[in-house]
Length: 139
Image 1 (cartoon, helix red, strand yellow):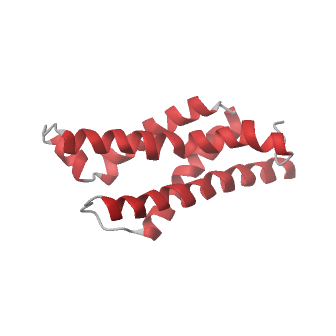
Image 2 (image 1 turned 135 degrees about the vertical axis):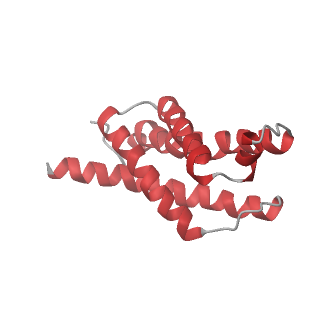
């Protein structure tokens, strides 16, 4: 039982480390490059990814899906969150049927750069990279 708890905590920490480093960095960099109307809420981002990655870590812990499948699940759950709860400006544009580059491009960017990698990359690291360096046992 203790080994399972330690394994799950390790999975969760890898998922969270990736989310905090990559997703938070992307949020900051994109705000420097693009005009994003929503304010930057670092604590909110960390809290959101704490819950979101808890779900991802649980799925990975019990199913050990490969990175592609975890990435697709993350993309689906992430876009559900975008459309149901977060509702950034581009989602509101899609709801209003204002389909343009200003709505499609953010959808594509969020899918490719935020949601797919959120669970896909940590899964890949755990299954393929960390074991090669003796940092993770795949059992």
